[in-house]
Image (tube, rainbow over all chains, first blue to last red):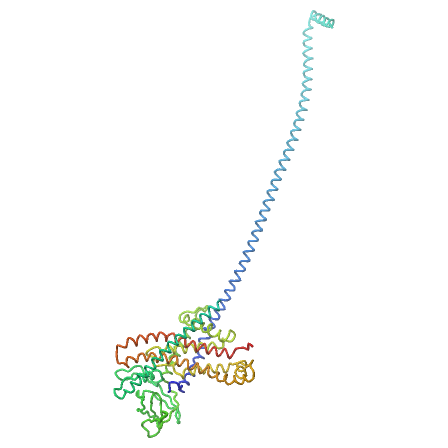
Length: 164
Length: 377
C-alpha cells in the first residue's frame, strides 16, 4: 500500500523545502523576533531592577529625612527651652536688680530728707531765736520808753525776785 | 506551589490530549470498519451500477496526486495541472500533468523523447517499447513497464510551497514590525506571532533542552512547529482538503529525518556513552542494552514519522468517511448526520492539528535535549 510507503519525490522536495524554509526563516524571522523579545525582556528586567533599586534608595532617603527632621525638631525644642530659661533668668535678675536699686534709692532719699529736715530745723531755730530777740528788744524798747515804765518793770522784777 | 500548579496544568493537558486521541481512535475504528465494508460492498456492486466507492474516494483524497484536482463539474474534472519531472534511464523528462487528460487508469499514453508514460493509480510507469496496456503480476509489480524516479511537483509539493510562501509572509512581516517599532513592541501580526514563539521557547525549548543550550535549536523547533501546523490547517480547509501534506508519510519522514540528524550531529560524548556503553550497570547489562539503545536511536524518528502521519491521515479519513455516508446510502436524509458529525470532528481536528504540531516539536526538543544533556551521575 503506497499510503504508508514514502514517495522518493516528496521526501526529496520536503527535505529541500524544509531546509530552505529553515534557513530563510532563521535569518529573516526567528533571529529578529527572538532578538527583539530577548532585548525587551532584558529591558523590562533591568527596568524592574532599577525601579527596585530606586525604591530602596527612596526608602533610605526617606528614613534619612525622617531622622534629620527628628534631630532638627529636638534641636529646636532644646533651643527654645534654653531661650525660655535665659529669658526667665534675665527677667528675674532684672527684677532683683531693680528691687535692690529701688531700696537703695529710697534709703538715700530718706537720709537726704532727714538731713534737710535737720538743717531746716536748725535754721528755723536760729530764725526763731533771732526773731524772739528782735521782738523782745522791740518789746523792751517799747516798754521801757518812759521812766515810769522802767521803774514799774524794775519794781515787778524786784517783786518777783523778792518773792523768790 | 508554582511547580505544583504547573504540573497539574500539564497533567490536565495530557489527559485532555489522551481523551481526544481515544475519542478519535474509536471513531476512526468505527468508521474505517464501516467504510471498508461499504467500500467493498460498493466495489462488489461496481460492475453492476458503477456506484460510489468510498474507499477509492478517500484514498484518492488522502494520497498525493500529480494534478491538483479541485472539483468535478458536469462529469468533467476541473484541476490545476502540475509539472511532472521524471528521471528515466535516458535522463530527465518533464511535461505537464494535463497531458494525461485526467486519466489515472493507465490508458492515456504520453510520449516524450521516444519514451512512453502512463499514469496508473497516481504512479507513473514507463512502458516498454511496443506495449500499450499495463499489466501487473501478483505482487502488483508491473510486468511490462519500468518505474522511473518521480520528482514531480505533486499536489503536496505544490501545497507545501504555498504554505512556505504564507509562512514567509507571516513571519518576515512579523519580524519587520519589530525593526519598525523603536522599542520592540509587537504590533499587528507580530502580536499574534510573539505569544506562539514565546510559548515554544518557554514551554518547549527551555524545559526540554535547558536554559544554556536551547538557543541553538530554537530556529529548528519554531520552523518545524509552524510548518507542521500550517500544513495541518491547510489540510482542514475543504477546497484544499485533497492536499494532505502533513498526513503524507514522506513529509513526516523528512521532518523526522531532520530531528534525527540534528540529534546525530549534536549528540555529546555523554549521549553516545549511554548508547554504546551504558554507565553504571554491569558489563553483561551494557552488552544487552547496547542493541536496544541503537534500535531506540532509529525508533525515535520513526515514531515521530508515524505519529504525525497517522493522526492527520486518520482525521482526514474520518471526515471523508462521514461525508461518504451520504453517497453510500444515496440518501439526502443522512446528510444532517454526516454534516453534524463532520463539524464535530472538524472542531476536534482544529485542536488536534495544533496539538500534533506541538507534540512533534516537543518530542524533537526532548530528543535533542537527551542528546545534549550533561552527565549528571
